[in-house]
Length: 203
Image (cartoon, rainbow, N blue to C red; front, side, top):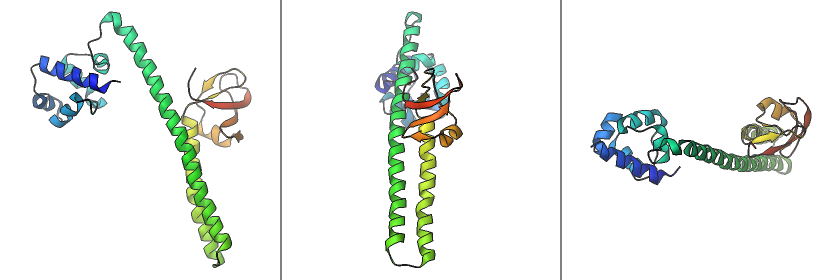
């Protein structure tokens, strides 16, 4: 979404309604600073007040997100463009999440390795060695569980049998044998087991 365009549109509609930033803010029970941020393209209206804002400005939510009054001729095209934009934004977010998964895995593995190394080669009491290993294992276990959650929710798995792309349950991802991000799971569509690759897009 073009926040600059949307901000200019909000300012235009506010002026058309003969409202100052302060008056619009009072109608929405927010500060005029928030209105200023919208109109300068520095922020977007919160979803909780978006409908109220549209009612005050006599526009639709689609108009607001488009940054212009959408005519019926352009409605379907605008809707299609927004859906495409939302898909692209999700794909980019999923890519960032999968990069985070790698980072988390590396960090907790280094912590565990460092603790085991210290416990193995530094002279200390046996109970202290155990404590160090446990201290290293706790963030490792939490981090790996979090990394698996990221892998489960970011993107999709593609069935090698029928090509169906879907988001599996956390349990099925956790329990599935895997090679990197390719996991041996049962497809919910064809019900066949196969080595399924992680993909970003739905199609």
